[in-house]
Amino acid sequence: MGKIIAICNQKGGTGKTTSAINISTYLSLAGKKVMLIDLDPQANTTSGIGINKHNVQRSTYHVLLEEAELKDILHPTAIPNLMLAPSNLDLTGAEVELVGALGREHRLKRALDKERDNFDYLIIDSPPSLGLLTINALDAANSVLIPVQCEYYALEGLTQLNNTIKLVKENLNPDLVIEGVLLTMADFRTNLTKEVIQEARNYFKEKVFNTVIPRSIRLTESPSFGKPVALYDKVSVGALKYEELTKELLGNALISPTL
Image (cartoon, rainbow, N blue to C red; front, side, top):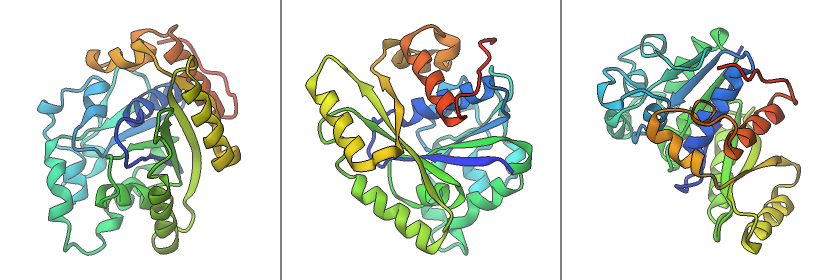
């Protein structure tokens, strides 16, 4: 069965969507069959991978409301082996519409379980909140990857996320583990970045990935072209670092440079 990784942080601007897109891309380039699930109503993952979110007729919203099967909403992408379960603005209403629904925390898990055998990895981009959508992601996942930007107050709020993960483990998904903490937007010219990296390593120990994602113009630009950085500029420092991170996830497996 495919491994499900939820990328979560209730704080916005941590590189969550950038990480979801680029990790999924490099897993695909490593020969893995990957499903990328956009669970954020802003649909930045959808547009960032090259799908016009305004043209999406059926999305993860319809899956959560059990009005569509997951397999029926999947879109192919420009990356071989990578399929997208898109989002759109309809998803903003999902939390309200599911308030009284039986088993509302398990809707995504039930949908993903039907498709897990067809994929090696299923990567969920969660919204910047700890609401029902994120709870669905954590309930469905084997592990959670937490992006943390190397900025002031970066670790603030992670206690709340840790408490949510603990509650999900106790009440919904006892097998959920932390895949790792990913440090993003690092500017190694500043003492602040070095201090945040050290503080994160002191707090999370071996759970912090060795790879640190730097600030990168190419990473910032690529979503506006609807491309992962591997397609936009595969030799940029941002691309090389996400490739390095994916090798960490895979145990340093080789990744094909062919696109």
